[in-house]
Image 1 (cartoon, rainbow, N blue to C red):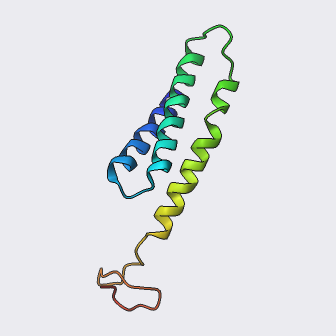
Image 2 (cartoon, helix red, strand yellow):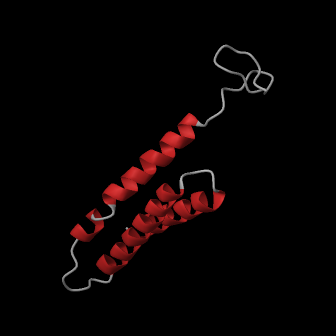
Length: 96
């Protein structure tokens, strides 16, 4: 659990530093990943009163972050490569 949270937080930090994605989405991923990592550490430490339900708290924000980043990457992706290695649009014309 903690490693998954660290991975999400690290990727969200990278997207935040890239400045190509909405800042609110990056901060959402960073906060949710951090909470997920802390929750995983608390569960691993067997802190009294902390149950598995604590991992469910950041689940929705992490999913919103993943879907949002995936959507943005998909929409901003370039066209397919032609056999010559040049990017082309859906009709096959070289992109400039």
